[in-house]
Length: 362
Image (cartoon, rainbow, N blue to C red; front, side, top):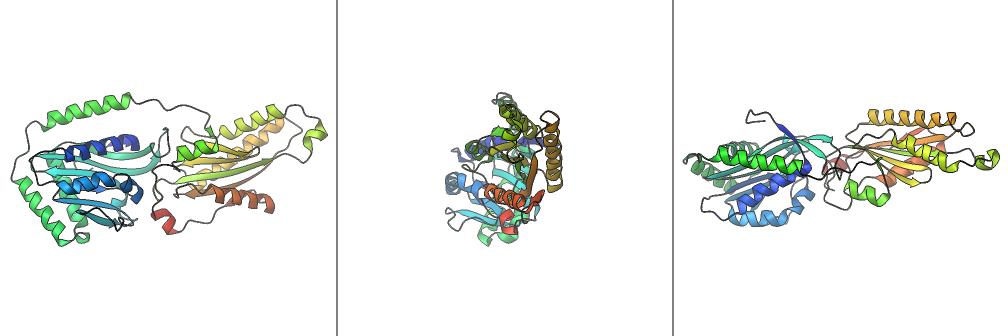
């Protein structure tokens, strides 16, 4: 990080808590202006969730700047300066909130790792790396950095107001108690993390409403951030096999098949049973080669069932995709599996996503 201190790793859940604490501090009544606020949101849906807060901040601040890939909406609150970020630039990975006055500063600067840890939802488990604190000089450093990076994308009035605010901050020494206050805040934050409810451990199998909830389809999530590998799987028995072999163990065979499917899942993965013989696997932060390796392990595990159920030779068809779209394109995945079954293709792939799908808002 820019401070030279070792960066910390934290989840989206803890990042949101720190962001809200900085915003609340900036909104607190105090005669220590002018106030400067910078916030980088990555994508539009994340800003929309906080729109009202930033409308209030803009009413108090000399300058309020928000940035996101694709640019902010045209109906920004009055006093908020919007900046469009390019998908390829480093700032597109950044989730940052900075508040600065001559006597106060708070900073969160976090970089998206494109990884995930087991959590209640896919979004809350996203991993970032960065630093946060409540030191005025650190906030001044970040305001100067962001002002330099975004200067050409800000109107002259915003640049002038920023320069005036920075000059005022430089004229006043930092308060002597900042380090003590920050140390206490970090202790409280660590205790809060330890007190967070544990993630429920399951076999990774969800129903379709559960998958929608976990993947954020009905909540605040955005396209273009965390890549997710999808595997569609269809497992068919030989036609007429229950009658022909007189099997009485359909339930046991069904449980064995379910165990073979869930056995390839990591703790961060989830699966849904679409029909009796069709499954969708959701594998966060995996690429296509890793997803194909999962399909290979599925073939081996399902093929091995013939040792326990020798009269059943399952046929397996699959489809693989890597997506940053939200909601997840499960309908496209299922269509690709059906195509693979019709054409007799062992593994089908979805067409590559257009740039707009990866960069646009969800």
